[in-house]
Length: 369
Image (cartoon, rainbow, N blue to C red; front, side, top):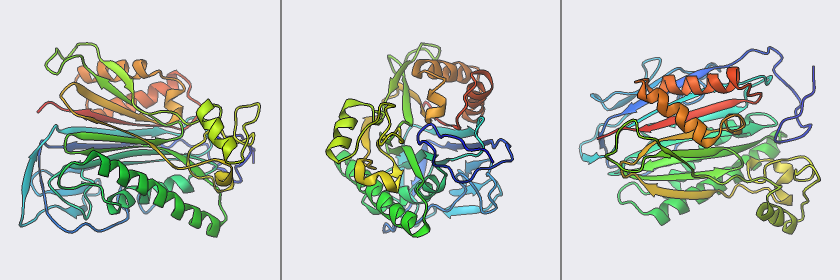
């Protein structure tokens, strides 16, 4: 069995998948412009649905939104939730089409996990549309990524994510508390299970017309915005990086690490081993400066915002932000759905541009009303 060094952490892998077999997945969702949501009491619940892997360890291929019955349907055709209610509130919003695709590249195993939830209200329905998308990029294994995938959004909801009236401050507070709670509980499970995996994250919520993006580590979110809402469809789009990377070599992060008693080696890694300075898990590095405190950014949808790309560092290692926006825009102009565009972006990154790392992408397209 060959030993290998992970790009985020040096010499920490104990076991690997020796099959050398690539895993690919695409999940597409389309949300209509008018959603009917029920009004119930909010309760915390784990995300145990189809996003990422099913119970058999295989990847579900599609999640769709049944507009007539109000049910979310998995690829297997099994209703995962029922949104019908006696009290109804209709909210007109920009429709969303979103899709995820992944490839393990030349790695022995896939350590990324992702979430695509067009209706992320779970047990907390309200007048605000709530959609959630996330990528968790694991290192040293995928246990931390899998844990965050299952629990983060539920923890954010239970922390008080607004469901009736939009409140940006309350939303950011809930996201911050959700990240902290997820990391605290993940660390307890990590200690009990004797594992030390870590995971970076880029997470996005759409609440009504407000978009909130939170990240830790080096996964990125890039927004494609036009100069005017009513401009021509083929007008060039500006690529805007929404997130800020957290690496031990950056001055602000280095100072925080040193204040916590850690050090940054000549190779730019924390304690000479970990490249990122913020992540879920990484239990052995928490006392020397690694934190799961995210940067959180928000903006309102105005019609100028055309799509957002969420990507792990594997994608951004071979694609620049403007390059990726141009690639996706060109294929959307050709009439391709988000699912096909996401697959093509990953294929281009891995096969043509020789991405060696795991490569996971979510493309979120905002449709005209």
